[in-house]
Image (tube, rainbow, N blue to C red; front, side, top):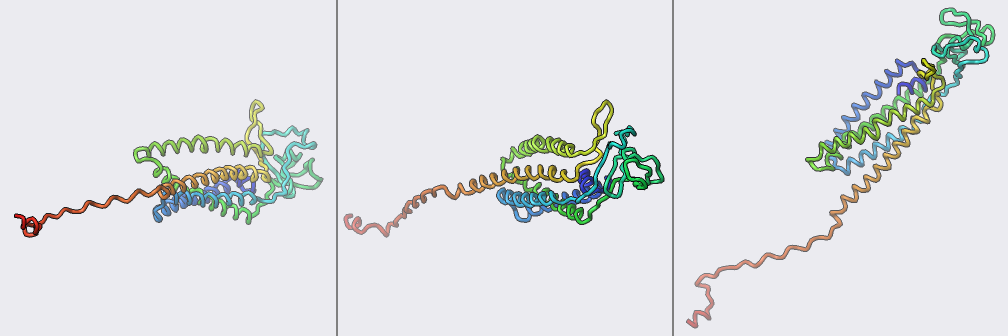
Amino acid sequence: MVKYIESVFNLSSSLSSTLTGSIIVPAAVFGTFTGGYLVRRFHMGILQCIKMILITCSISWFGLIALLFLKCQSTTIYKGNTQCSKLCNCSPHIYQPICYQEQITYLSPCHAGCMYINGTDYSNCTCLPKGRNVRLGSCQNICFTETFLFLLILFIVTFFQTLMATPQLIIILRSVQHELQSFGLGLENCIMKILAQIPAPILFGIIIDNQCLFWSQATCDRRGSCFIYNGDRLPFTLFGTAIIIKGISFFLLIILLIVTIRQHKIPNNQPSSPPPPPPPPSLTLQSPEQEDPLIISTL
């Protein structure tokens, strides 16, 4: 997320790290605490927890769709080796961007063919019109409104995503027998690592690397780190993949809700048992004074 904010909203690495930490950490803590409070306050069972997870999942899903379209409309053009700088033999290991008229960012002064430096200004650049200078640093196109909305929606998505933590735990604990609860938690943790926590960083790392515009070259002609990412396509590939994964989980939650509702209806649909037989009449003992008069007369 730090690299995403840095590339899409044209912020520095330090500022992107600060904003990401100040948004995600409080949202996660507040969401986890709120989820535990709601489960305890309303005494939620399995069915109520599933409904709560379904609602929070749908809210976070719509939040991801909103994040898909929030980005800065950058008009910056990035240039590396050009026809006018081929004779300079510019090193691909050096990334020292310079900006020309806030529109074109060169990877280094060498790539712009600059020959003289005056502080942070470069002059006599063969790739630029005569008399035009460039400044040190990449071209900035910061959009404060889109950045604020992105951070706000990111807080909401993180809050509702962590709101599901306690209901998920309650569902697992109440779905297995008491002596199997520890085994159920361990199995759930193992499945989460195999299906999500291990492949997710690999998948999203591949997606982010595919949007790199310029790579550095390490030793032995190996690819190094990425200098610049494609800020226009990165949101669609990154959040598009997250939306697809979230849609699959939403579909599985609907199936779980249907199965749980059917299980709750089974006891109500069973035929009622026949009423118990009436108790036998009580036997009363008669006193000698209440004996049959016919028997007394025969005596």
